[in-house]
Amino acid sequence: MSGLLAARVLSERFSSVLLLERDRLTGKDHRAGIPQSHHLHALSAQGGELVEELFPGFRDELSNAGAPTFDFGEQVAVRFADGWASRLQTGLIVQSFTRSLFESSLRERVLALPGVALADGCTVLGLRADERAVTGVSYRDAGGEKTLPTDLVVDASGRSSHLAEWLEQAEFGRPRETVLNAGVGYASRLYDNPSGVWPEWTGLAEFLQAPDVRRGGFVSRVEGDRLLLTLQGIEDGKPPHDEEAFAEYLRSLRVPVADLVAQMSPASPIRRYSRTGNRRLACHRLRRWPDGLIAVGDAVCTFNPIYGQGLTVSAFEAIELREFLQGCPPYGIPAGATRRFQRVLARRTRWPWLLATSSDWGWQRHRAPLPIRAGLGYLRRLMRAMPHDDVLYQQFLRVLHMVDPPTTLGRPSIVLRVLRHRSGEAARNALLSEQPLAGAEH
Image (cartoon, rainbow, N blue to C red; front, top):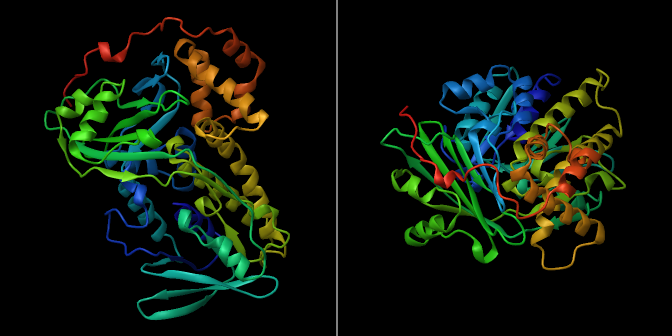
């Protein structure tokens, strides 16, 4: 996704943009290079606005293909450890879809741009560089090994990027790597709904919550009038993939999803995924960064997908890349400019990294540093207060959708509301499990 969004911006500046793709692309099918593509994807409120800025009319295109569009606060029922959050209008408009629909639709828009081409079945082998700059890449396709000279190389190769090794081989040094893994695992399945009867919500979520809530998941309607279910669990609580254990896992959740999917027909196998660790390369701290190289997306900063930040961060980075290129002189990218851009991206990813890792520290066995422990204590109190305080819940959603930075949760008025809350209060809203699941037929 980062590569497609970057190509959109690069096409405004360069006469020729070539996307090198490792997978063989076959229309709208899932591809091997994206193992998490079988799991639930959504475009957050902020992400939707940014993608729409780059591709006007794209959200309507997804809607016309059947991707539901809805207000997150109104249409997503959210279960926390201490109860259900209120259902309320927030103005946070989101879309849910399968990854294959989103990616294939975006790829069609990108490849329709003048000067943009794609070569699939290509494995990049390394960077071509002199003592100062990257001058191209070497890659292998069906015709053998080749070298491609370029004015600019953008690494958007995701979690499987070999950027650190390539930089070291080119004698620019190896960026320091930070990894934090919560041990989250997924299991997902797609369902047909022959009855045409749907619950009155579009999405349903039970958040994992350290240290006690070790099982959860997300459910949403997607295109084709189907339901996509993604279960999540920590370590020994990871969801299984065999039929009987999967059904038992569903029944163990506190959200009323087992009876719902029992009325539906499985439209896919159960698929698992567990490569969910947070990983960040400190590219911005290298003493020498090569001219002619930019790295974006998961190639530099990878988040636990449970928080749904990846697509939005990629869109933010594309906007930053556009502003960077617009600030460069027409004759080319000045020496040292790509290094400065990596520093810009580091600042852009700081807050989503903090949001993801602050939560995931709660699952670590080793003792966290004091500032992290203080933050975790506050976050746990916030999570327990949100089912009983609509103001807190709305502000949390604005942070979750990256409309506001996490620092807004530390405003004095918000902190005061959190501290006033007492655990164990009776929830003001009735449990969803006590309400009928069926709604009007569509």
